[in-house]
Image 1 (cartoon, rainbow, N blue to C red):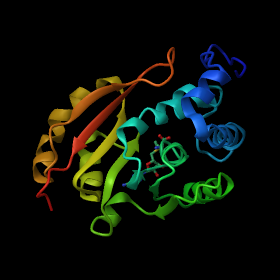
Image 2 (image 1 turned 90 degrees about the vertical axis):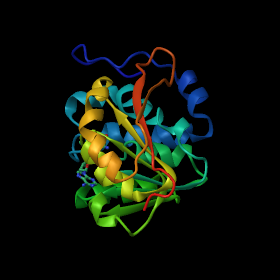
Image 3 (image 1 turned 30 degrees about the horizontal axis):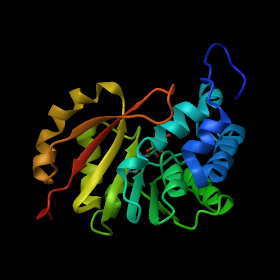
Length: 220
Ligand SMILES: C[S@@+](CC[C@H](N)C(=O)[O-])C[C@H]1O[C@@H](n2cnc3c(N)ncnc32)[C@H](O)[C@@H]1O
């Protein structure tokens, strides 16, 4: 697909497998990948080493969270940054409303520009830190990727989840060791037992680790 750079190669992923995997969302996702590749480094959104690995390390890694999300309702992605996974979610879940919560002005400007360019009317960019929105809205699901350790993430995210809804986090393989330090805040905020699952996308592409935490009903 793209050329190889210094051994930091993107695995061969055929366009056919991508179009099959993303279905109707593919043209939107492809445009997002192109813009990230062309502008991501210049605009300080991704590092130079990431440019050749946009599809597997970023787009598909983000897409791995989508099967765990509802088709409709309200989803918030906190610390969206370049739009990962929030923009990918909005493209793949057109029936849902997606809030992208991000404190940095420059990144919010990028996210708003991308939402317009990609025609993703279901995106609303919310500038600010997640904790500033506690009490302002509650979602069916709250996602995040590369924002904080699990204990802090629970503190930031769970108050934004409606009782019965879920926090769904993209994490590294070693996330199990983050569970113990998160127990106290999980108890306080009525989070259920974290479920760690392996989330595949396209065969041949590394799977992703997803952590699911339900906000127990009766919590508030
Ligand atoms: C390492 S970046 C990850 C961006 C993106 N999720 C990704 O995977 O590429 C972390 C992002 O979280 C944002 N962030 C940090 N603290 C936050 C908070 N309390 N609430 C919301 N976003 C936060 C930062 O501004 C930054 O854009």
